[in-house]
Length: 250
Image (tube, rainbow, N blue to C red):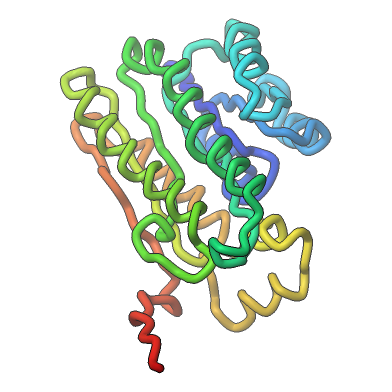
């Protein structure tokens, strides 16, 4: 059997790190990218340089991204699956009080970088009849106070995924949007600037989705028969459901 290769962005923590471990355990080669070089090196140390190739860069830096693609070792150069996991939420304020710089960072990371990454790898994915898994969020479907631009970026990811499916019709390339609900990772720590108390309060007693749950889901999707495509998959913990609408009263 030919060993397959997956590129996982945002691999230094959370969904990304768990997905690296799951695919290595399944016998795949993994390209792990992210900003934190020391965490990427820890993945290489844990799994072996023959299984994990680490590339440290900010995914918003197109030149660095192109260099990472061009510099792939021969054993990792043929990519069968792209997992667009890199992304973030910043701030919890309503739009009228939000930090414009945070809005731009979310758009640059969650939208522009994801689209650039996908565009660069599409020729190879088409040649290998590969697959793309984009990590979106229920925030792209269900608005909430403070979700503003983050929710907008995830709506883009979901719709971009469906439009990719149309454009790639007949190529054999599969595209999936995974849309998780409440998941306990570093997500809230990043969003709140490291407020551990806020993170603990959010997840307390909620039995949220784990990073391993999402990694297992991506693994399942990647190993379906090639004639099957999961278009979009919304996942919530049992303890979470859609909320009601707000009503302002004078």
